[in-house]
Image (cartoon, chains in turn red, orange):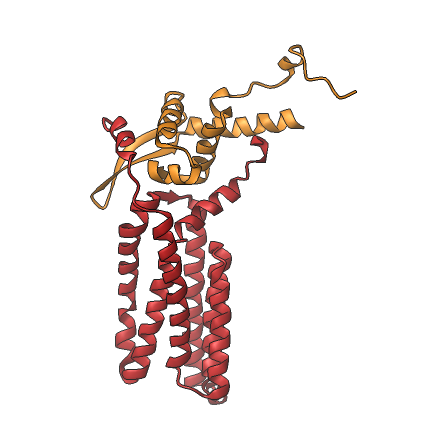
Length: 208
Length: 105
């Protein structure tokens, strides 16, 4: 019935359909694998290599344009949706700033706090990264982000308990995300082959 | 005895329903364009499940009513024919929802 039109649900479905291609999982997962490799092979200069992670965003946007838009179409979401995404990015930025300030405080002022963080480093990082996934899942409605948050907590907790190298929990997270993303991408490409027939409609409004 | 269907005498009590929007396919298109800022034909087709032909005719009707504006835009040098609601279309959709609520309530 028309009165039952759930606009929020329509918006949510449209947004989720745009992210069912698994590209965000593949690229975040590849970024995690890359970070793990940097920390494993060149840990002393990790900051130089992790700075290159920004390039991932360009690759992601390029893949979105090459794979998703030709199959699903072009869309611009409402300003409310864009605000939600900006709030998530704001949360991640705030988290970075707080982490940096706390790290500086621990390092320069309170050595006991520094030792506490150092002794539980993997757990601290795991909780921070998991919280980012939780906020991302809540803000975007992409449920599998909660699973990634859980995987993060489990992998980093295990790393803390068994005192394994930092790179390994990150690698586990990356492999899980890439695997899930690859399955979603394959499913997406099967479900949405490049369509034909829209040219007539485009031509009908070609004089605009 | 089951309730008899409303007679034609009852009809004037129903507020004016916008017949352009009331058609289910056009209502679906309007609802999608109401919550999205802009969308091209392909995205609308995938979301609404309409055929190209149906989408074309309903968009033409909505455009003629002044509810939808269709224009070509270039996103990174690639052309996209996109549709979005006009201010008039937005108001008409809200009014339609209110009218339907009144009918049901």
